[in-house]
Length: 310
Ligand SMILES: Cc1cc2nc3c(=O)[nH]c(=O)nc-3n(C[C@H](O)[C@H](O)[C@H](O)COP(=O)(O)OP(=O)(O)OC[C@H]3O[C@@H](n4cnc5c(N)ncnc54)[C@H](O)[C@@H]3O)c2cc1C
Image (cartoon, rainbow, N blue to C red; front, side):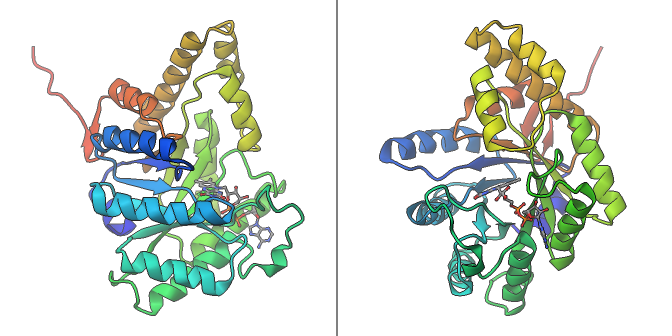
């Protein structure tokens, strides 16, 4: 379903992010995860796009499988890095033929396997240029939907490390929306004040598309450390660090604290009219399912609102 239709039908979207599996055993585990999370009726699911050759084909394969073998509405991610215009065109054509409705258009990072890669070889440097290319593709009427692909882009409540100038960063985000992006999904964040401030800064910058909040349950001190390394710029509030440290290295306790923190983030976001919540699942279902249960979310069509009787 085109993202415009999704937002017109859903007060709040609930979506999950998957990564393409790298082996048969990972594929089996992901199948089970998808089965469990499908039962929560997500509004859509997204599939990340890897930096290197073979993982890119795996994104396509997983997207097609989700589209045709499950009830999930898959949104593939696509990055500019290491791609010619002809390759991007071929990918868009394939997704259009498969009836894929929406895409996440991303700049991407130079893969670790290709140090020193010269980005001047890429057809598109920034996310905004990829958005423009997708809009041009849409205008050519190849996609079966009259509006073509719905287009999502990334936003960073705690900032993106490549742009320390925070005013310029908002200009660059606005450029993506001005080129035709329909919605924003944020990088994960752990302090809702960052998100609300980001939302206000978008408003001031004249960015009026829906902003979906990226939530990742951090389930141990170790994963807190590795995530800080992966999602550069992300800030952990002192209260969260203190809560994790109080567990004294006891992993089941750390897990409980992480689930509690993410639940409270989501509850507060819902109370503050967030357009959607996007769960970074890391291909696991348990934490997301627990948060759903804590929140009383029945499915993505709405929240359970039981009538209280005396
Ligand atoms: C929701 C989400 C999903 C993601 N999924 C993936 C994925 O599947 N695969 C993957 O490889 N990566 C993924 N990423 C990571 C992302 O690719 C990196 O963070 C990347 O460094 C930036 O991507 P972008 O789309 O934000 O790029 P851009 O919007 O191009 O921005 C990149 C940097 O360049 C700056 N910039 C933008 N325009 C200009 C300009 N005109 N002049 C100068 N500077 C400019 C921006 O401020 C920013 O610092 C994801 C990130 C998010 C938040």
